[in-house]
Image (spheres, rainbow, N blue to C red):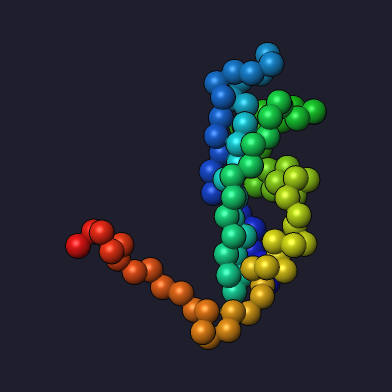
Length: 95
């Protein structure tokens, strides 16, 4: 099952007569695999929600209005064949 979360909010101190305006959202969706992204929001949405009143559900609704939620969930829930299991490896030039 896909698990969505907000990993970070990027905020402009003021924009369009509002303060602490979220302009970008860093999001993640995890299941058997994971996918991450950063979404540019542009101008403040209407109705404007003050930073102090934001909830993760509100911010995720912004993400889902611009990201193909069903596609992401299908991708992260897909099972990887054992041959495609990956692990980090030191960079060849860092030795």
